[in-house]
Length: 202
Length: 201
Image 1 (cartoon, rainbow over the protein chains, first blue to last red):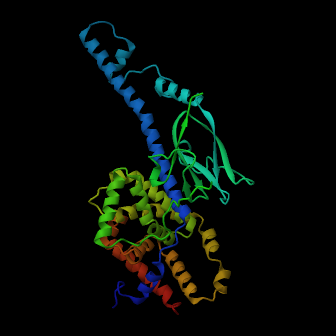
Image 2: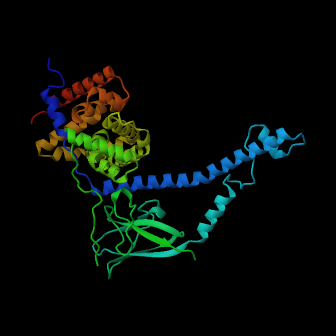
Image 3: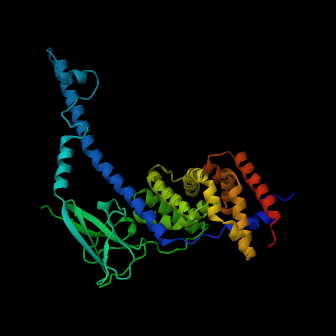
């Protein structure tokens, strides 16, 4: 009996299934955009975690100090000390979100420091142009540019927080171009060109 | 001034499984660099494996669009899981394990819309009108393939199309050796039975 490994019919079937499909460059671009977005989310998560870690560290130190005070002095205990004795971290005066007040203050500050920024890009033959950057989470659907049919210029106005941003233009869902009018970013994502944008405070 | 455009993906053609020692070494270096956070290395891995992943997903699912979404999701998960990947383990079975899982999830979703998909993808009218026997043969293969249970289809594709060893298939599917051999055998039997009658090429 012929095994499946040498079976001519099976080999012919497999042979028809083996040719690699044509790859749409836009599809691989979408993969890299999705991975860049994931990377950006990681950074945001890490940035969000850092103050919490600091806060937890401070809480442990506070609990230790309170416990040490309790052990060293025989006097009526405060509510915070009681919590510390029961093994729970002390409840600090934080907003209902559980976020440390300092973090919230920093976010409010960045929200109020937003500035309108107009980006312009010339691509007369493009069918669609988007801005992708750390401020859109590298999502090409969040900052789609509008074309001026006469000049071939694409524009979009964004409200961006103060600070340094890295961005690029995504043309027709497949071509990644840095802004020729802005300085090149040394840390462009995935080897794709990027530009640096500095937004000042109002 | 019109800016010079740069293509995101350097080539639509992706090489098949790298076989020679140099390419294996290059691949290992790329994986190592990607694990260390080198994003260019990861982009190169995407370019290297995208077409193979898409081929597998297109044979597991009925729609190219779904297949592209599954491959995209796979690479995002690969990126996320790279820190836990052990470099002494083979990369391809690990990659195909993630890809296979995504295909199974997407396949279950597709089956919920099975009726629409089945008649939507290959209309009966088109079958009657086709003249090219090569195309007819290919379509018949695809129909026979889709008629297989998902785990048999997966095992057949890994063994006969991707050329994986049974050992790698165990890693990729989580199934045992004898179970995989049985799946491949049953898939071959079913394909042989269904396609012998139409094998006029």
